[in-house]
Each structure stands twice: as C-alpha cells, then as structure tokens.
Image (cartoon, rainbow, N blue to C red; front, side):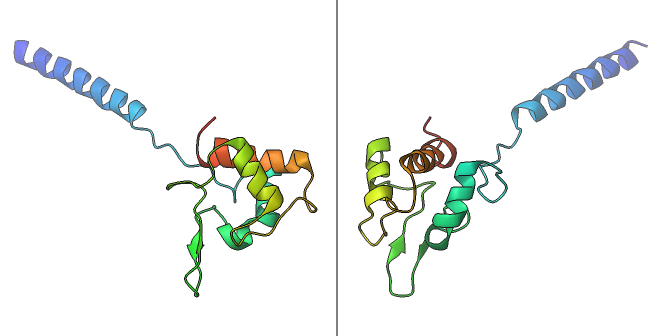
Length: 121
C-alpha cells in the first residue's frame, strides 16, 4: 500500500514538472512581415521586400554587394534618427524614399525595424 501511494505521488510530481516545463519552454515566434496585417508591414512589403527580402533577412547579389539583414547582425544604423535618415535619403546603394513615403510612413518603418525586427523597443 505504501509503495503504491509513493508511486502515485511520484507520478503526480512528474506530471507537474513536465507541465511546468512545457509552460516555460514555449517557442517565441519571430515577427513575420509576411503574416502581419499592420500598415507598416504593408509598407515594408511594397517598398523594401524587393531588396531586403520578404522577412528582412537580406541577401548577397550576384555582383557581391550585400543587402543587409535588418533583423540581426552588426547594424550600421542603430538609432531611430539614423534609420530614418537612411530610409529618407538613401545612400550606400539604397534609393531615397523621401519623395515616395510621408514622414509618418518613414517613422512607421523605423518603428517596424526597431521594435518588430530587432526587438529594441
């Protein structure tokens, strides 16, 4: 009787441990531009995907030029102001978007990069 009770307690404890570990090991899915219904994701898909890729993962072109990954790596532009300026004014192979996007839309893209892609805010 005592052995059976010990096995039941052990089984309950094991069940609790497995259940708790499942709670703490939940997989965090990265932000998906493709799946997002936000306006800023739509802006990214319309203006940035052609070069940076559908999930901002970047790529290397046939001529060796590297289109940067906007999600990870050593970022050349780190602050909101630097990112805004680069989107608006272009440079380093990127075309300027100042005449195609409003300041609000550029700010939305800056927020998307910082908050959703880099997890900075």
